[in-house]
Every structure is written in structure tokens, then in C-alpha cells.
Length: 249
Image (tube, rainbow, N blue to C red; front, side, top):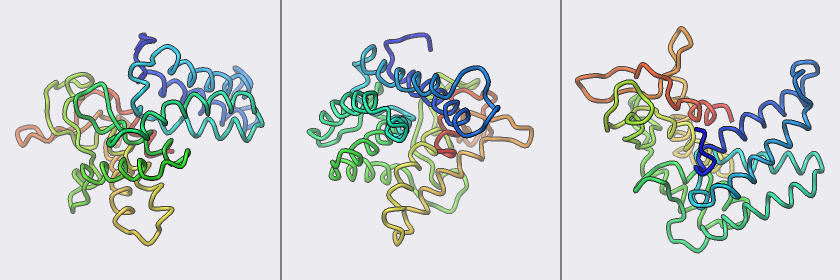
């Protein structure tokens, strides 16, 4: 988490700054530590820092990367024209790499289901509709709709238990953060095509699946263990945060 060279560390921080910006901007007296301008400036600077200090994996889509177009939108709404132009240029340089690839999503892993979310967002923003569609179709390939609470809208993921759980092993994860994050582009596409109920079913399954991790005492588990010998929630919160981001955003 302290490494400035790992691009995947940046969206979480940018999202935290942006959340505080929105709270400070919209609710008088709720946030007293800093002004809304302070938080928005740091959301912006964190976004650019990822590209500057972690260019290696920044060429891939990031988990929670949807936060970057949202920050850009608010920079434009606040009429911070210089910052908005700088950020848009930096992000377009990334998107221009993706538009020339047959399969524009990637990861630090050999295979993953995290890059599609941000690739879809920026390709849609910059008018690269064919690559946005490729990313969306990839999501629909690994994110099913089936009559089962755990697998409905559950993006295929396997190895994060090794890094962020108490019971560490490679295993099909039930409602790890891929569910909430991949629901973002699916539901975005549904809003453009409200007649496509399949998109709604998949996106709803992922968005609501993210809430199944939270127990009645408020504890949020990283994911559910699917091995028949276990079938229980992991005892650590781990990296649940991005899952709730996908639900909330």
C-alpha cells in the first residue's frame, strides 16, 4: 500500500478524496478539516500522480478506475478548466493505447476481471465505442445471470484470497469486488439500452451481490468461500472496499 510504483493503489485514494470533496461541497458544516477545494485538488493530483509515478501498470484499466471520469466531470463542473484539460489529456494517452488493441483490458495478473471497468469508461468517454463494446462483452462472458445468490452477477475471480483473506488459497470467489465493479459498465450500458433486460439482470446481480458480504453486525467480508468443504464468508474484510464502491457509485 505504501508503494508509489503500483498504479492500483491510486484509485482508492482518489476516490476517498473525491468522496470528501462531495461531502464538503454539498453539506454545510459536515466536513471541517479542509475545504472542498482542498479535497478536489488532491483527487485531481492523485489521478495525475498515478500516470506519472506508476506508468507501468497504468497502461491497464484500474479497479475503481471509474472514479477518474467522475473526477474529470466535477473538475469541469467547477470550471477548473486547466486541471480538467490536463487530466483529460493524460487519460486520453492511456485510452489511445487501448483503442489500438484487439483486447484492450489487462492486469498485473496473467488473466483478470478488473481492467474492463475503467477501459469501458474511458473508451466510452473518448468515443471509442468498439473498444467499449469489446470490454463490455468480456464482462458478460465471465459474469453470468443464474438463479443462485452467489453466482448471479458474480464476476469470475480466483486468487485474491491468497493476498487479502484469512483462509488463503486459490478458489472461485463468491462476490469478491469484481461483482460490484463490473456491474458499473453493465448498468451504464443498460441505461443507454433500457430495453435490454439481460444487462439489467447481470448488473443488478453484481451491484446487489456486493451487499451480501455485509453481515447483520456490519462486518464486510472480502468474499465467500465456494469450496463445498467450506461454504462460508472469509473472516477478513480484506479488499472489500472496491466492491462497495461498485455498489455505491
